[in-house]
Length: 295
Image (cartoon, rainbow, N blue to C red; front, side):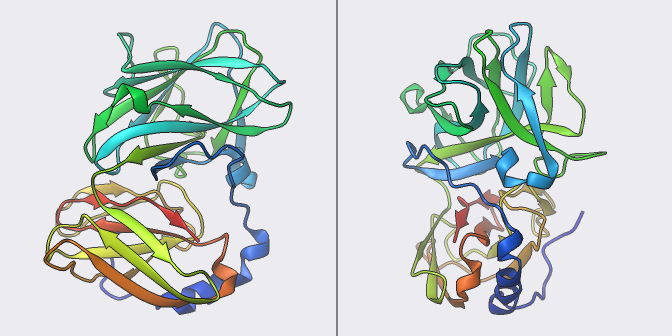
């Protein structure tokens, strides 16, 4: 597995290349923006990976799906987004369990998703009221319990092994195979490493980090889209599952945070990076991962 390199091309050079790929890229803009926290884990929707898309049965009452997830930051789980199909009023039951699959006990949260139109749409399951507090690396399980409600879901397929999202997918208490992953986006509130930006592609942007280890080394990563690309942290030897795609994954810089755990990086970003390039920061001492910011 590849480790963080010590020398990488410049952000500007790679983003110029990204602009040439812009017309070929398809990144999802959710129709439902109920979340206010930060994007954490990304198992791509079909609309995000059109060449590797898959559909999933969320209807048949005999089926129960469980997706394994590992928190990429500290905080409270705000909720989970799904890309779903079906007619207006279609439903499916969702639950969150602490720990990895297979889970058959009492969930930390449960609720029902309902379609609001006849089109493919993104729906948000708000779990914030359950106050599910997670630390970086904690395992939890997303359950989709089919109830004959007429709903379908989307996700990805890649053979022989799905590299778009690493953790396993289970169906009815058995592994569903390494090629298949149901699509979801998880969102977290508060805690951990946080990345924010000012400015916009086509000018100078600031990439601001807070919550890092004081005076500790960090790595700014970017790629052409979201995903679950894994890399080895050379300082800890641990495998980190990022929220970025393997497409064009690059480590731009490895600065040290200041004494308060903050850092601000400025870069001139070409306009072609808009809608294509996504950025994430790694705390190399703690293995902490920031939220993913897509430009």
